[in-house]
Image (cartoon, rainbow, N blue to C red; front, side, top):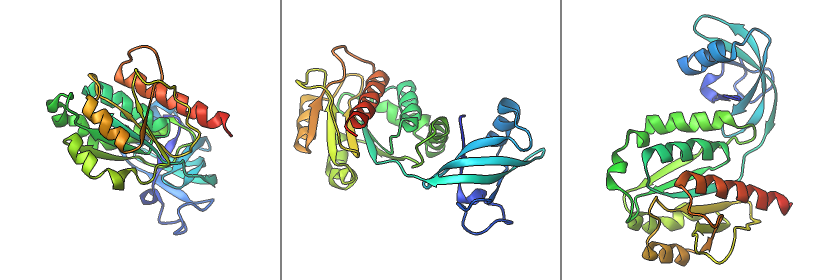
Length: 251
């Protein structure tokens, strides 16, 4: 955990109603954050911590009090910054792979996950505990806590069929300036200058030809990130890294 995620509900009753104001006090009483800070980070009074004010910005807090069951933090400085939309259409795959992808892609700036049961996906994966809202929330929190610049909590949408995603695609894809789909046989490499992007990655056995054609019909551009056949999670992280490089090199 490289920083602490703060929400409006953490605001102390002794603070102003504006939870983003410098000097605001926050009471942390949940077991996960308190135990991690006390037992792993071993914080002490007056220590400074990086924090994320969820869906608003990033800053630092100082530790005002360390009690048996709760902590009090004071906001020292904050900068409002919301990361651009970055979507990931992920073909339903093995739960261990999905766990890695969701957690670490969140830390790399993904703001929208579209998890789709494709024709070549294993249907039973839809019943994984990983996709329960409580489990997803924990993974997203872990991902957010690992980074220093993202502040937008991702949204996760799960579709039982590719047809269902396709039916609602106009609404879900509206925030993105460009769309790409990873295909090892594509004729071009990933070079995307736009700031808001959605990219699609198939399950272990890939998208079918029909699914690829439907994505191309939705203006997804076929592109590749490697000459090699990659695991799902490796393809995701290759793609996210190349997206960040493409955008930064065009600034």
